[in-house]
Image (tube, rainbow, N blue to C red; front, side):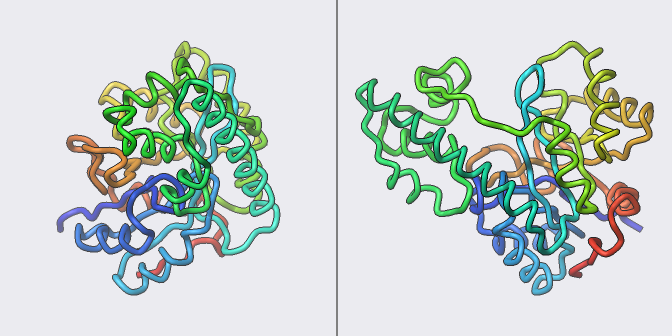
Length: 290
């Protein structure tokens, strides 16, 4: 029997992806994926549409979200998998984070304006069309205006850490982000840890702290992880009794070369990995749509 595959890290137009939640799930069905986790940045607004599409197309949809939190060496990303249908604490926290995003976006536009690049916030909102608005949407406007040739140049010149219009984000602490979602019965996964520029020894400091806060897994399999990175993450998870997660980090055309269910190259995540993670979630949260 051929193994079945899943994708536990994807983005839609609810944040900075280019596929609607329904289209993402439809594509997952066409690729014969057994399940897909919809993990938009700082929002759960696309999850109901995705779940309805899951029932329509016969794909298990996992309610998720990706949070950025402030670590010692920069931003840490956390994936919450199997979030409950409704949660006032989560909704309130995400609303605050989106407010911080808007403040940051407006400050970056002010900096661009001072550089002679006059972009209105309405233009950015029109480009985004989703609830969570961020730097990728500003980058798209810059590209459409012909100011930059593409995303890499937009971030290098203006929006990245060393860019002329960069403004840092206001973020939760790592422990706050983990406990926020873990307390709801979600499995919280440390997303693409090897993208953080830090000494490897730092993980032996931060992982025990996050596990105490409720961390349940480490994302070993990711489009930007090498085979060596994967082995490091699998060993790290085993050392601390954590699960292993994986996904493409698919954003549609916003991330060329990253395919749904396949990431870059030969990345594949099996149903067996998904099943192992399910036992870590609050039972009532795990409701297959297929």
